[in-house]
Image 1 (cartoon, rainbow, N blue to C red):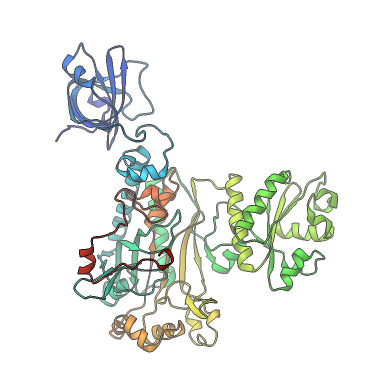
Image 2 (cartoon, rainbow, N blue to C red):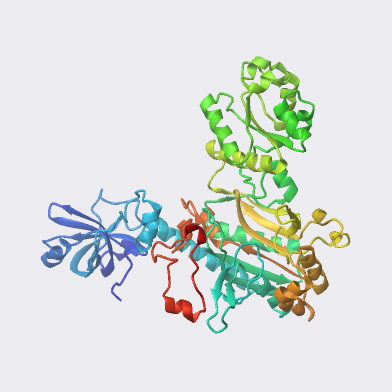
Length: 602
């Protein structure tokens, strides 16, 4: 080994011993001939002193050192002189007085500072990712990720789960997003697909008699990216036989509580995790992944607006829409510029507009409120009693502001749901150290695809409806509710799962309802249906995402790119390797492929 101890492991108990360190020069300081080096390795930073009176040779070598050079140093561990200790460092009470020094590898000046907390453009960070990963926040994020995965594996192993690897090259099957396709050289014109998830594979493992399966699974989806999406991602994949929905939820709740309390004890948890019905979540928070760290619930004002004289409210209701709003405490004094910003925010998210209704003035209560206490265009068109009715419905009081939108229910829910999140952020209502987990349950089984004129699975086609909906499924598909559940936390979806269909006849019914012909069912799903004929047990599972969880547990990570070693950009480009890239003509010929130019670009 090039070292006898890690730089970050130096402690007072090592005083008097001779050690050898190796690492990167984090910082170099020359104080009147005595050189101080902060030497960094994977465990932290240790201070090394080069005194020409103690070792002229090592001091001469240290004069060459520059940031990010890789060096080796030997010397005696001594206490730092009184008054020079650094309480910010775990090694801050001691230093190494060098007697030997060796340059293992000089380094060019990096394109950005490694050892200081300076802002660096993300594109530059990703181009030089191997340098970015040297920075302390990235080191901490990836070490946290390691601990999270290890905890999950140990937790499930103690509960008799068997970790089984499933193939990466599989058949293309519908999972909700586009597949990444891999052409076969051996079978011209045929393709493998990279798995969007091991969904059918884990169901086949249940048929195989492995009643508890898990895997840290790599998954691939060719879809448009956002801050919380990557073309390849990692999930904890779970499946269990002979379980009901609550069995799965209880296991995941136990896992997450134990994980958070063990690895990040500074985080606060809401226990037990609430179960929130899908309809209630959308109605109250405008989304199926609500942030429960704060209130600001949405209220339905449709009944109040139904008889309103204000056409902006009345007309959308007459057209089958809704009027909803929520109260934000203490912002009745917002300026015109601030309320215009909120209206712009809502319009960007689909709303036709936003009514901002401050309840100000000198009134002591809603009963004392006068129209002149409401500096809003609404006050010119509605009665004082209408305003009071809206205030009572939203829970608004004097000094608060109501934010109201009207239109189609889906549009209003999205716009107000995101505006609610934004107000929580602006007002500091969401404590970053509070993790408000919840299970969303009772999802619709199917969604009507207006463009294609067909039913689509809300989750995936292997999800079982609740038992009571099988009898009238074809007669009223939109009414059916699924044995499906999501785990959400702080406005982020962390996991999704369901109880699966385990009988051939029932699975075929769902596939026919989704528009597949019998021939298509056999071609795409015949292997799974055949397996069900040989005794498939009732089973269900869930797939928690690793990347999003680590972001929530970390200190300061802003997207999943901050917790993945080598991520892609939002345009799915790897800046480090320059991928995707063209390939040689002979490679294409081997695969019987030809690149056809985009006709629109000539």
